[in-house]
Image 1 (spheres, rainbow, N blue to C red):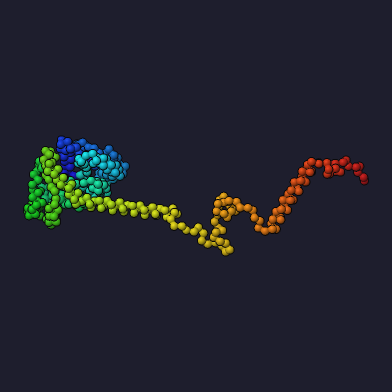
Image 2: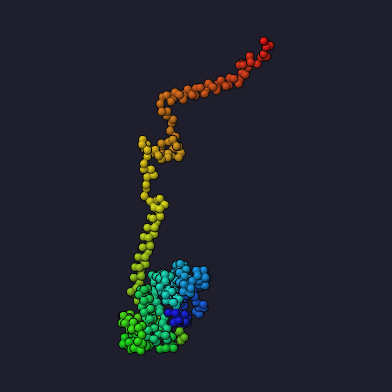
Length: 363
């Protein structure tokens, strides 16, 4: 929740792990965060420029955050590869600091992609940070609990509610409200507004949620509650292995299967569009007295050939008359060539009378 001290919580919790030589792998997923006060291994701001996204796409603050996360989620597989290497060398915790606006991450496509990618491979636990100071109002407290309940049922993962800022206000009142419905009803008596009546009716619906909810008080200033939080994270990890992993593996396999089927369907559709599907006849109708086979081209090696390999076959005249005509043509051509050769060798044998001087004319 925005303003609940989430960034301060990550700073205190990660520094505590560093002090114990149990170095965590910290990832910042808030592109709008101006300064990160803790040591970070992967920072979304190094990949996506939040202000440039707002400028280029003409977006507001929340739209810029959502779009930045969408762009980053397209490369999240590379981060998974880094986590694979880390998981082989160490069993340390990996902490992801998400944007404080619940609707920006929890109800966005990128939040779903990132959470599913992690939960389908690694034991994943959700931590919901609540501002215990502002939650002294029963209506605000109920609003926070409804948020936590909706997140748990959306992602189907174990969740821990961290009541932050217990160095300012003791969190025992919130624990009592969760455990005793009548005490919470007494706190609502002072408010007679419509929203208080709605809160009163909804508080009954959360009894089952409270019965299994893991809650811890925490101070981002003093670090109080850190050891208890680590114990709850360990229990939540065991709960994941026992009750959630099987479901996530099933969902992952179903998703992979559906993606393969969709890919095969699209490939089949493309092949049909390109003309590589079922065979069809090029010509189905021809004129009278012709066959369909007469329409198609012969082998390219020999246009007059009927053989499959395009080899030349011996010349076979259609009938005897055609053969005799062809032989006569060759004979005439041969005689003409001989006559031309004889004329060239004896040029004076013909036309001599034409070359003599003419006689005197007579009148």
